[in-house]
Image 1 (cartoon, rainbow, N blue to C red):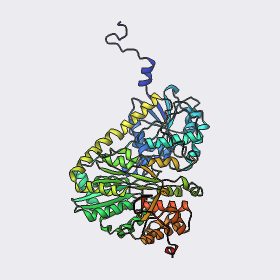
Image 2: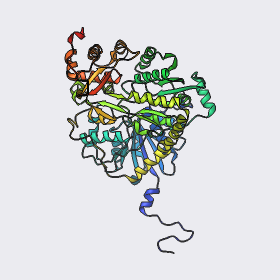
Image 3: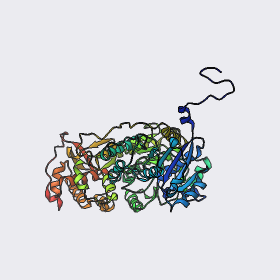
Image 4: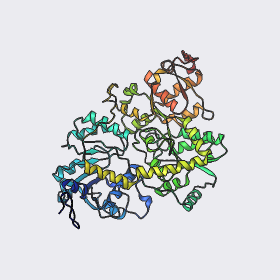
Length: 569
């Protein structure tokens, strides 16, 4: 027998490392029953929330890797039956389903077992499972959002578990990892685990020619219509502010000979669809805009197949990934997306689409105003108003794609290739398996700058880095920028009436609209009779909707000056 090798016709002995790399992993995944699609024969029964769709796609991909993964799904006793039916119908591979009361009956090898949590981060469930099994088994978990104020406190759960170096919290983007690092450094700085970045898996494909024709006919689109699609939950607080899209689309309709159409599709639990319909009338584009609310998954897919361009103006720190951006690229659509919360990293800027610059109005001074907020809805809404998307870049990007079909086709092809490379479910599942086999030490990410005030206490601070730039409005002069079609009364009646602090915003808007020149924020506060911080928040919101222009102090011809208090009457 030859030294250092294997005799002809014989299988070489494998060392311990080889066994670890090639043996099957037992993955015990705790899953909220609401994540599981209903056991139905129709694809429209898939979960409607993007994060839940992504987690289910991951489970499907893991279940298909029978050579490397043995998957066990753990649920609550109440959800076990539905989970079992869904798993048998949807996964297409042998999967064991149990409830957590049956955990002691599991026969597992702790040397090749992973406990994985599908759901919100910092949940105690996976650690309870580890305790129930009585083994030193690594725990990993992923997340569906990081924008909830209670998560900083929830992170302290890591102080109460017997953490291990191979534990991991998997971030969906570098931006999400930064926030996770900040939360853990603040609440559990001794936690030894790692925070790797693995994107969410994305399913989808381009339509065939007959499928595209049928989809466009379904929505009443003509063959020459260039269709722009905004797809996602209709919510100012939790997804995107769409007034800038209406404004830019109105400019496109005026300035191009192309037959442009706009489709806005998504779940609508907040009544935003009705507001957008009224605003489309004000912009004079109602006949070119379709708003489809509370649709099933079939309509979502059909809208992607019918569209020519995808727009995602995400501005909520609740958005941790932007699954619809991946789905749009899978469908072969060029994408214009905001460079915020990691969404801009999902495309190749200038190749598969355009990352639109975003500005976060510096909010450290507004912290005291936020402490009275009692609900996460108000928290999200306030925060989203501090973020604005570069509307000129949006208009220019839309015009380039609408008016140049070859550029549009080239970008669409690149988008599809990029999505297949980066987000295909099987590839993402393989990254998870590789992580589980490898384990690893904690690796530091770019942390929130330690020199910033209240870095550990602020709920706002770490999210400011989500935007392309941070602007301190107190260092600028501001002036009113009137809309051609959208008057200040329209702004008040249709946009800000439901926002927190609407009265302050209205007073500042009326003063600025009447003044007609550049002023300093503190002088605006005096004239409006409100605090400086409340004025900064009002300026942030007015700039978001395009009514305020900033110019640095000292700019020629913009000295600023006192406002006549009589303008208030």
